[in-house]
Length: 100
Image (cartoon, rainbow, N blue to C red; front, side, top):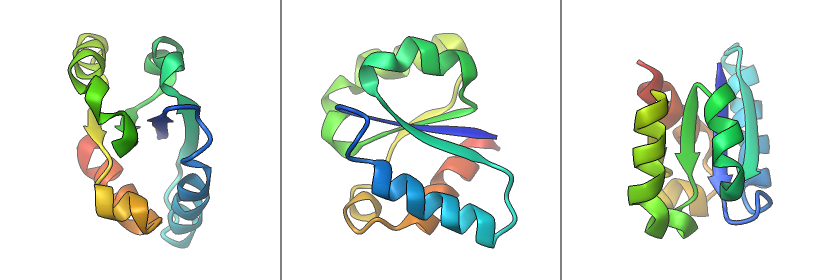
């Protein structure tokens, strides 16, 4: 499963990705979790199973959700509290719930 987190520059989510990867390993979940700039959405839609948006780019929600829907890729905005506290477990759970 490939989980892609999109943010403004692809850098602010790197710590969260690290926490999510740790949690996936703890739960023996086979996942590739990456952070990328929202500007790379076209490329990420081609390979991602799930897209999660950083809360800081929620203002782009309408356009991004439309692109994801057209590509058949589940998408959501990362829970703001989980993002702010770097709660990798909660964000991983959010991604897994989208996949179902």
